[in-house]
Length: 241
Ligand code: F6R
Image 1 (cartoon, helix red, strand yellow):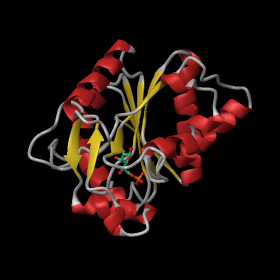
Image 2 (cartoon, rainbow, N blue to C red):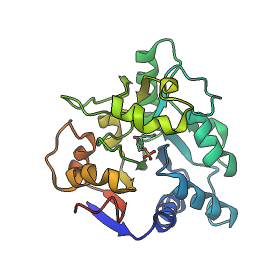
Image 3 (cartoon, rainbow, N blue to C red):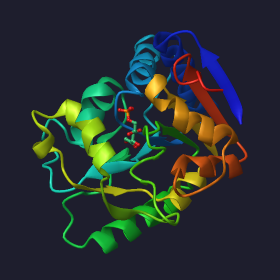
């Protein structure tokens, strides 16, 4: 694993923004796997800056987001659709039809998940997957469990994740209890992975990912088996290394 420690979140935003855009410069029709949450905000802002400077063109890019809440309207301020449009898609020239999400309101969730996996395959697979990490070691919404869930699936969110994410909602009761997520198998098929962790509350999970045991109790630890992972950390997240 390529572990890079930075002084500030700002620096990580710049480095990660360049990293993602570098992929697009090398291959204009790249397939990007994208994440939501606080972690990618600065990287997305820097990708927008690079687009505004004319340095990068997203017109041929395809994206697949990792996950979405269930039973939340796509226009809800907390939906991941909304988040991605507000923080990236509305500010760059990616065609709407190239943007892909799992549908958290699909009637037949099994079918939805299978079709998403098929779509990723048809697009040629994910060239680079951007990931955050939960304080409990989750990636996407693959929560600590007794086994790794391979493909996209519906998941009941852990109490700790509901608590972590309640900061975006008016109250903890409003946080959806379920989400639909890409599986561990879908994630590690990406050709390259960029994972970012910010803050001391992620330090324990980060330590486990780098030199702990590979276990579904820390889903991100599976990244030890991937051949091209870059981990960008701030000092807090790197504090136990
Ligand atoms: C979101 C996602 C989650 C987050 C993780 C960290 O699409 O996949 O796994 O990356 O919960 O969230 P933040 O960045 O808000 O700390």
